[in-house]
Length: 269
Image (cartoon, rainbow, N blue to C red):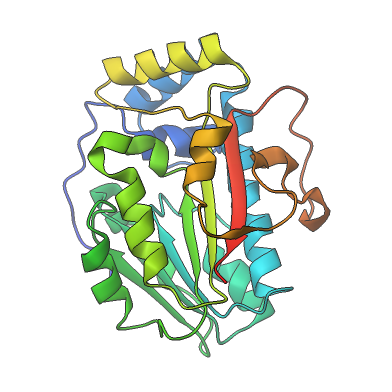
């Protein structure tokens, strides 16, 4: 864990998913190579920025639900990405200043900006763990220094699992993490799908592959497997733009059109 912004080497000669995502969100932590890939994807699917923003808003609405209605005071966010306000801890600590948040990523790009993720309330705790999502036991060991796993935790896996194929252990990762959670904990998850726009999504996956990035699109049923044994919160697994729009706060319209990401929230009994 770190509370400083260390000097790290960032490869700016190849596009990076976190930086492309940042470009879609209108951020400044990206490079021409990332913008170039982003524009290539937009040539295939003009809704790509809409999907990125809808996914970010899903995280925000889910956090409001969990910190508000569910009273969750501990959050474990894996695959954090480049900070974009409002960050998860800002939302959680606006409901409960004493909320404890642990961010996890293994990306040097995110590590370089970790300081922005650690500016929480004096009453609460925000920490950053440098670890690979495919190593859940290390994550649990490090996170347990900050979070009490005998009490409910909200586990967020936002736009992460489409970077981990089933054969690479995606379900084992989720299963290991969920098993460690106390009853009353929640899983928040979003994942790419080709159910709505099969041709556009598959072409986009091919463009990312040409840039050295592997993506996996999953069907509604395949995403549902990650929630096996948990109780889904209404409205279940839906396009992220359709999950609890009543929890939106000052969201500018994103326009019409499908968003090829499923999202859901579920409770561990």
